Image 1 (cartoon, one colour):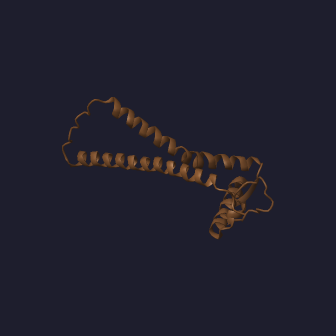
Image 2: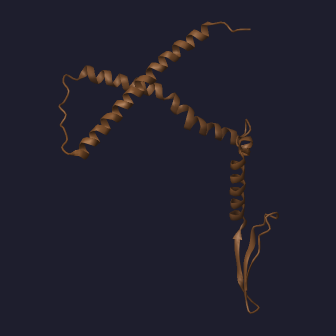
Image 3: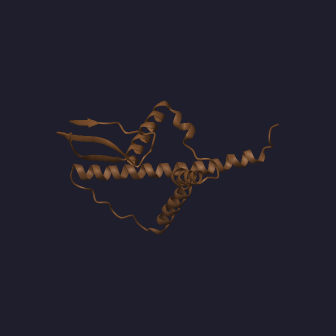
Length: 161
């Protein structure tokens, strides 16, 4: 006879008896599942319900001046704010490097045309990617100039009552 019993989750004990096997009146032993596994499964279920209902938004941020708040803010800064702030300086560094390399070089090396369809597609893809990055970095540099201009304009204006 195999009998499965549901663990008592309200006690939060260290382990729960899940399956008990008996054969002809003799116990073959107990298989135990740790409460950590059960707690994880319960937490995953709760998290899935919160995500499905949208209620996780209310409790996902740590309070100010707590270690959780500091860790969350540090992760946000590292993954979202600092990379965005680094784009404009990277664009200016790229264009400065391009200017210096153009001024220093006397002649451009000849490019060897690859033979075959796949090498040609690879070269075309690389060229398209390089040109896309050049356009994007040029737009970033121009937008930064526009942003600084508009910011200076707004700073000169007085506050409206």
